[in-house]
Amino acid sequence: MAQLVQNLAEKVPVLVNAAVTQNRLAAFWHAKVELIPPTPAEIPAAIRGLKERVSSAQPGSFTQLTVKQALLKGLGATEVWMWFYIGEITGKRRIIGCNV
Image 1 (cartoon, rainbow, N blue to C red):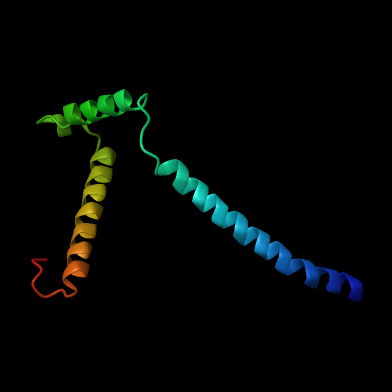
Image 2: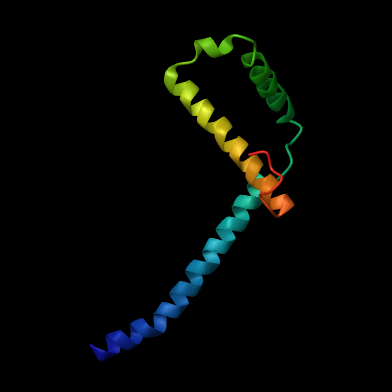
């Protein structure tokens, strides 16, 4: 039993170190994949997606939304709005002078 505890005590730091290293590598891989510029083959798809978003923002198109979709879009807009205010307050380093 004592030998089992001793073996476990020796292996724990090695396993923890390996887990931390793999987590850092996974984060680096994610950044490497997500932050690369688009390839020439991906540009037409991005332009199509942009055109679809612009066409979906036509006047009166909000009447075709379900209540759930409208609520989710409203929550998303509210989140962006609040992050804008948080950035403004952080940039000014004070809350005084912000039209909140």
